[in-house]
Length: 151
Image (cartoon, rainbow, N blue to C red):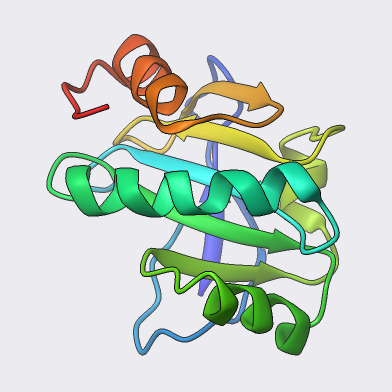
């Protein structure tokens, strides 16, 4: 799967890298045009705030999957470690693996967790540094993607 995304205010997509999918049969390009806007959560197993917020993202994805696609990306770890936490938390939303932290570098992530809000045209609307609960996630989705969601 080739990932492409555009920086804030930019319409130029840039191919980034191939990422293996964790526990999914199909792949989805991040940042490529889509029918739905996307919320992309970057996380790591060693990050306590990440562990706390992942179930919030899972509940948000289950409630709002018809209007926004939620994708989790483990940053800088191996598949076994990431998949272990995905299974432990029984996460049902799309999970990808960024072993070399390429995508987080492109998003200029300096704090884990971080969440990128991507418009349906693939451009980045906003990047939130730090943990979110379901209510905060809903507020930022409405504010930056203009999508009505359940909080």
